[in-house]
Image 1: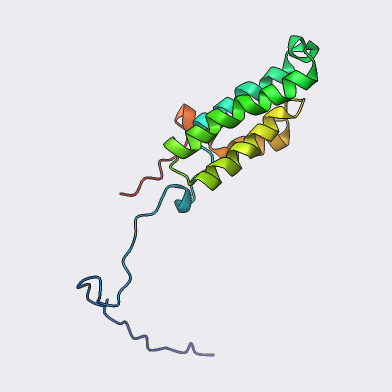
Image 2 (image 1 turned 90 degrees about the horizontal axis):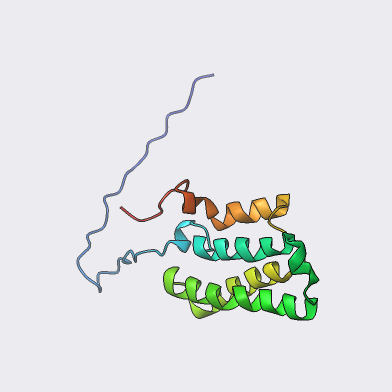
Length: 139
């Protein structure tokens, strides 16, 4: 059986002559739109520190009525600022990720020492803190 040959027609790129030319402009993409981690590494580090406080026996002695909300608030507000100002996310996206990390930190056990936690750290891009991650900046 002989292979069939197919003729391919290559069209030239349309001219780019201005905003009314009918050609869509390419807008610069944000880092999160380029497939980078959605969580800033400083936010992940804050979660790591507060979540690992649950490993200390002295931390468990404190009444959970105080400890759980304190962990939640300790992660919520700094993460909201980090995501909004450093990661340049919209207010809703920054709030969503901040609440997610705050809930994880408020669970009264260290979640980041588990396989689920390792997957979260990889997703959050914590390796960028130690220089292991690639920079997603456009050339």
